[in-house]
Amino acid sequence: MKREEPGSYEDIIHLSHHVSARHTQMPLADRAAQFSPFAALTGYDQAIRETARLTDSFAELDEQQREKLDKQLQILKAQTGNFLHGEPEIGVTYFKPDAAKEGGAYVTVTGKVNRVDEYRRQILFTDGTALPMETLFSMEGELFKDMDS
Image 1 (cartoon, helix red, strand yellow):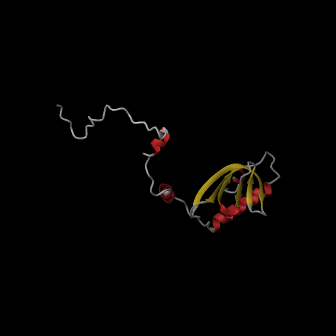
Image 2 (cartoon, rainbow, N blue to C red):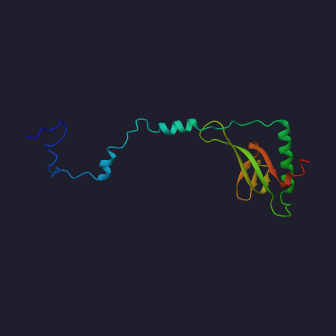
Image 3 (cartoon, rainbow, N blue to C red):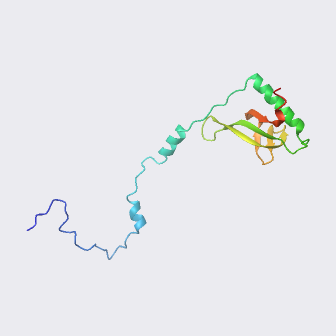
């Protein structure tokens, strides 16, 4: 007689698979779900990633930077509707507050200016973008080239 190793299943390995007459077989997809990892703390990984995501804080502009932006806005306002060669293209860096946590990010948008809305305090671009003046950090473009001289 052949000696069986413990845990070798020699006594049952060649038996046919049992199929219940009373219960239908579980679909393969549902069977696989039984063995998927269990997440005890749902959303924990996402919360960790969100906490680790860095944001910048809003930097207050000094007097010189504010004066420069004011002059640039005056130039932009004066040119609104008087664009002989089409709307001017400028690059604007502004502070975009983060929707999920304190702080935000400095974002640069480049586009053609449609107009300056003094009532809503926004710079409106031809593509529909509207930037609040309170969040402006800097502006660059051909329109402002004479300012630096």
